[in-house]
Length: 90
Image (cartoon, rainbow, N blue to C red; front, side, top):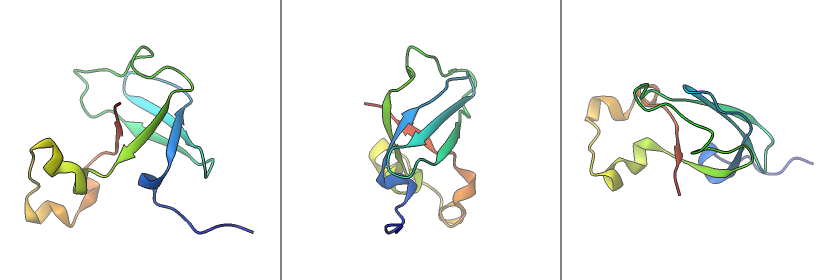
């Protein structure tokens, strides 16, 4: 029997590969594989930062922006596709 579905932001993920512009991760609870796209090409993702097997969590940029000292304009808040999911760094 399948349990209640959880948000992608409510579980941890294990790094399964590293490319400079992509970070495939697999959900610990769901087993679902997500690919995080690095939109900051000047700062490539590296195996040193994200070793295979490393556990990470995702943060929702629409709710986490205030913690970063950022504000999201009202017209963008309703359209979350303007934001990429980024790994939460320890």
